[in-house]
Image (tube, rainbow over all chains, first blue to last red; front, side, top):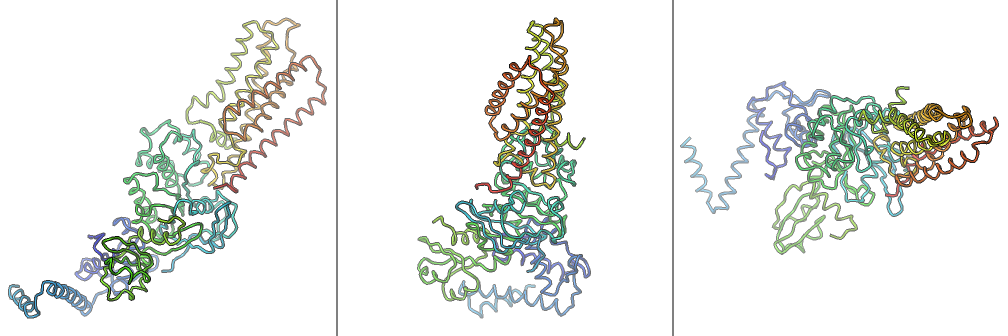
Length: 122
Length: 294
Length: 219
């Protein structure tokens, strides 16, 4: 897990995003318990409230469930939700590309052209 | 976020000649590390002394843990470190251990010896050096070794980081996280500091004190959402002044905190926003209340 | 008993075996050796005997300073760690009681043996009578106890030694002046009563000082 202190993205969100990736690509299996909030805080050398917020975020996203006294375990992920997540990520990356294009003064048609070239390469 | 409390304070008041500690209500959450932040003279040590039971002249009600423990049980469960006249000056580490076994039921000498070695307090294991001959940093390390060698449910630490070097401060943060992890939600830490930057990475809940009163408190993540760091151009200073919680201007631009609910008022103005550090929040809040004109 | 002596040792520099050895054995031995030394210098018996008392007063005053200096004042007296424990006051109380007992015992033993040393080779006229043991024990205990009631307010060693010297002078004067007088039984009863009173007072004042330190410190 790589946490960036000064990236502008809150730490709890970075943690949530990285766990989400692990869950969606199968690294963390369904039914497995994530590390305890205090154990994780100890390992990452951050405050407990940050890891707690990260887990609450993951719970909000429907990826994990809290069990009183035992911790948080990974939910079963359905294909629909997975696709949903990936689509959201794509949208984010595409928005970045559009913003960069605007800054550089690249037109929409030029951008689409670049996209097609890249797709052909892949 | 709503969590159980390890300490509930109600209508706490203590008057001094030219100072008054006045806390109508304060709850310290259980299972977390809470930082008490304030200037020198804000009342932090007084509050900690009262909670540790070494100052008894106050009015108000303090409830510890679930309220069912006797005074003896409460003192047994609390570990306190403080500045100044803590140990009898001629004590050596052996005497500290002996006295601790006498004073507390759950003092583990082997843990104490291991900690003394780990924290490199004495040059040799059976040092005959008296406590009074130790430097401030060494004395704090000895105090920490003593409280961590006991089985406690609450640590009250009065400015533990102040006399420590950066390496040791980092170690202290690790020790605190380890303590919380072992407790699994049942153990808590409450420490005071006038330099939050060093302890920011271990702080879960922050209480900011000024002139004997609590002026701001909250979970760190919530505070970081309540206050937004805003930076902008010097030309826009007048436009944003009244919307900002705190603001500082120089020839290159302005920097300040804005309450997130007021962020909309800055729409259309060329600003960048950032998550503030706890340190920045504390400085801004304290500035609003301090008599010191910075 | 073990608890009491452990409590007492909390206040002494007891981690070094030599310190404990000094407190319990070397110092009484030293006082007796000095008495013998005086006797060898052919000092009068009563001077040797009286000198024993004087030394005991000074040394006991010093030991009380080491253990409990300043405990009766409400100022910071290095008891913070002890006060964080619920057993703290009990430990302090037991420690002081043990100190008082040890003091009386030491004085009793040393004075008794000192009489025999002082009487070595003494003529019938010069010899110190046996009932002096009892009298000197009581006088020395009274002096030491009175000193303790006063010196425990201060943390300054010179002040404490000073008070001890003043009271030592008083003891010497009283001792000399009444040497050849006969003490009636009621005199002894009164003196013992005063001694007991001072013991209780000392304990109470000290515990009161400890209690008071929990309250109103000017910050």
